[in-house]
Image (tube, rainbow, N blue to C red):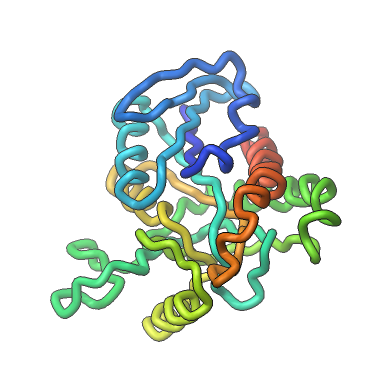
Length: 249
């Protein structure tokens, strides 16, 4: 049963490719798919590129061309929920598209013809990812806590919002959080791909889970030292979490 691990950026994927045993590259749809084994499991690594369309295209290719049966997304996100700080890790239980608005034909945030606004992640896969994060985060944070983080990272589980927009100001983040809250949705983090992958996986009946490291508070400091944070904090966290996760499969 093949597992796919998706990331949007090379820095987010860094450290994972070296875990594969005898990786083989396959080119398709303008992307490099790295196929190999990790702890005896068949795994495909791929960069989706940024945004919902790119993510949906990549997820569809994984399912159609590589016969993937499970998909996990890893990367970074901006924190918008109360108590979510830089360095924390969020395991998604649901996704919503914060830029979906087909009103007045449908309610704001509702996916047209799906009769719902949120897409639920696979419970079994998410539970394993959460447990792996509990163990992996402790191991990873020992190496970067003093230099890069003020406080020890915390683990959260909840709703993540996706949209084709980089939220980079406190005003944007506050407005987004309040708009979702007013509609009954309490989002912890915001990014650009997860909801699209969740929708494709729902269409195909493929289990999906996602874990995101909080790189910023989706505010005016969202661009500061992003690359350094991803390479020194988010990437080691993802590697430690996914190592534990794949062992548990």
